[in-house]
Image (cartoon, rainbow, N blue to C red; front, top):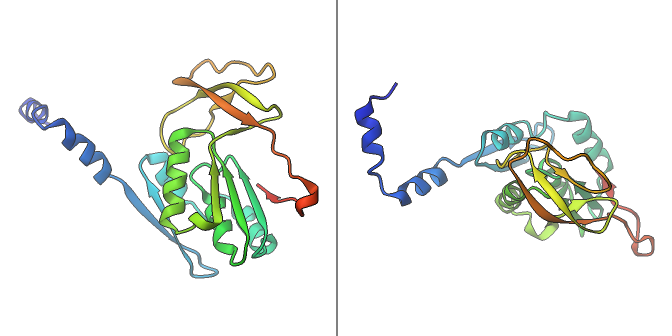
Length: 192
């Protein structure tokens, strides 16, 4: 346990250094795909994001295997609740043609982490992030944050009489939209 003398010294560190320290604590996780040899990068600024990044290809191996078999270079892929981008990033790397990924993530800190992960993997041209809540209703509704940290899950959009989350850290008025695919423009997207 640090002595009181050391704790007193810490308060004299200029405030800007605390922010530099937080940025310096950002971790870059590299995961190698054993099938293709491709290396995926993730930026982690919270423990939850770090855990998700490390488990990129392990958390849901059946889903990854399904994506390997189903995705084609020109497909459209829709990732609802994309979190930090596990499936979005994997899908975008499989698309070598005109394919595109739409990653929907309503949790703002997590959506920021998702954008950073897309940039780290140089997938900006194949991936679009929508920070909205997928719903059966178009409009605005209270979005209750369960936790603030990047990679968090369990937040809730309050529509159609959804019970109010008792333990939440904050509420945002969030745009919600029905996710529909117009049939005349082509086949529906692969949906995760």
